[in-house]
Image (tube, rainbow, N blue to C red; front, side, top):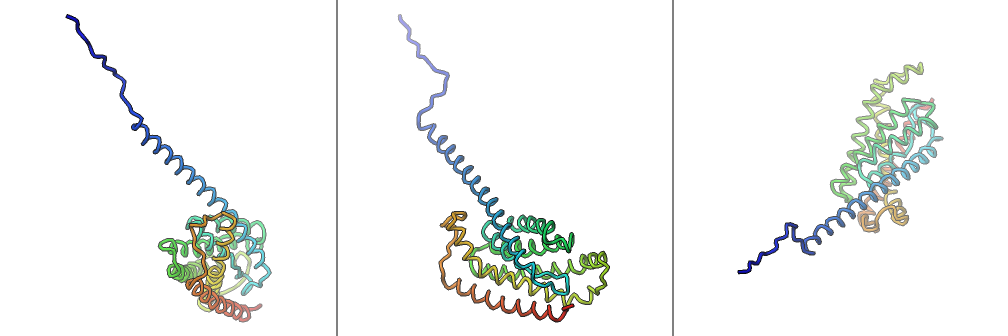
Length: 259
């Protein structure tokens, strides 16, 4: 009697259908890695561009006379805030640190470490605050609330810096100035007017800058809607009013404390 034995293979039996999900998963992972790399590259490029823009703005503002001899007026924080809108909150402290460091070794030589610390804290606080709030929901209401919170937060933080850091700087220079007495009558209105000025300029420059970046393909076209609409009119109107108030306030302070 002849016996027949079935040949049993110990190797796993895989069909073509088994490999399809694996291939698809690998393809998706590669796409995600490529997208992540593009995002990082875009972030680095954006940080470089806006760091250069902020520094150029600081150079342009350098001839503006300082209030009371050491309180400088510039609007680079507006550029940094716009960058944090586009590239996220992380861009705020990064660009603030880069620009403050470059200013320290170039145009900030008169104030030295004091200028570096005050520039970094002011820029980082302002831009980080507004970007964190705007990130919650990217619309005109959150943008306005973000600027309002940034004005209040930056003014408060800089008052603390003026109270504790400014006396050290003035003492090193041999300048006698009653900082505590001047906190409510000089430093408070100055910090408020300066952040108001940066807020107004950021409001008015955001859409032109984002359109330029979109034309240069540094920002995806589908990521930001930049049509001129009702929200645009609100932003421009509020920005214009704040700009007028801030400039008037800074001019008044300058002449009051002119040396």
